[in-house]
Image 1: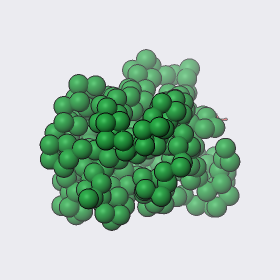
Image 2 (image 1 turned 180 degrees about the horizontal axis):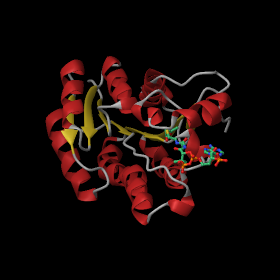
Image 3 (image 1 turned 90 degrees about the vertical axis):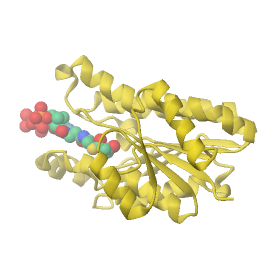
Image 4 (image 1 turned 180 degrees about the vertical axis):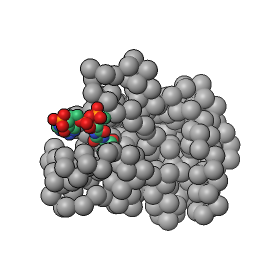
Length: 241
Ligand code: CAA
């Protein structure tokens, strides 16, 4: 039977490529999104993937949303924690809301989603939990104290939850993309991107969202059952963790 996969933030950017890649690999996919109805509709029409709207920063909304997905598609076998935002600014200018928004959307969400699927995965003795971190969670980044903290935090979360669930057939891993050609990276000021970021990528280009989709498909596959607690870096050589 086809596995059921849920991808948060799965209608745009890297999440869209992950949803599409999982579908191509034979999964039944549910893609969640937070606000952009127009993009979600266009995504769903183009790829034939069902979309669900809720705020991943809200625990109760995750619980209700997951119940809805499971009713529609069946128990979730593969969870991809991808939803994320940036509120870039240096720490000395950062407002508490800019800290909180990023921590709750990028890190609380990982708890909110994983906590609400883990019991079912343990009962069924199978699960794949893959969280999308960032090169900037591994190495830090000027202007991203909030984002780097959240993206580093989910690596620690993954290593703990991997240990707790290894004997239950559940693997828990991280994919850490570098700079990928998405709207999020296009929002970086062009002079900063050209002068401070691109020269640091040995492969000499931005990554493509599909390159991250393929990493997720591999970690989600039955073949990757011996890999847990790992961080798969896909960053063009920018940082070798
Ligand atoms: N390293 C060192 N110095 C830097 C720097 C860097 N990476 N980025 C900027 N600076 C320096 C600038 O050169 C400038 O120095 P001077 O005053 O000597 O010229 C000074 O810091 C101020 O820079 P800005 O003019 O850009 O300052 P600002 O206040 O307008 O903006 C900023 C600051 C918001 C941090 C902006 O520089 C920025 O957006 N930087 C990009 C941050 C980034 O890489 N975000 C990643 C987004 S993509 C993503 O998050 C996905 C992912 O996972 C990879």
